[in-house]
Amino acid sequence: MESSVTNKSQKMAGTVHWGTATVIGVFAGMFYGGSKEAAASSKDAEVMLKLGSTPDKREQYRLMRDAMEKRFIRVTRGSIVGGIRLGMFTAAFYGLQYLFAEKLECMMFIMLLQLVLLQLQHLV
Figure (cartoon, rainbow, N blue to C red):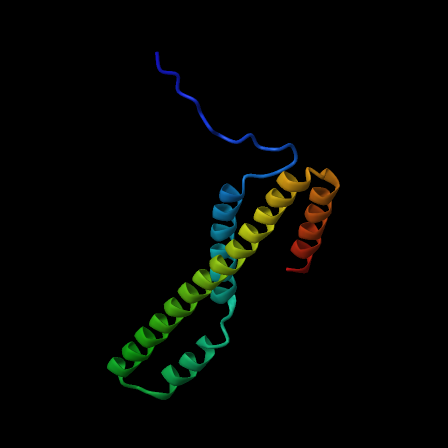
């Protein structure tokens, strides 16, 4: 008879699975970075000024298309950078938390790290 042994490590009390938290952090960072760039409309005012200065419809269409392409690229870049930044921070934070919890088995240290994370979230 063969017995299958699962070698799944038990999650310690008070810890979060760092992989799940990282994925959530990446998506939250993508949403935050993209929405922050989409809300920044300082570049769009230049296009409106240029549109009023030319009577040619083809030129206006080209200017609008260029502006929308630049805006799309800006929002996409903001999403990617925001996702990477928050995802890496989340992975590092929860990875360290899990490492110290596993090695030291010290719940006070975990609570201290969670307090630091809460303070950092208020700064953002």
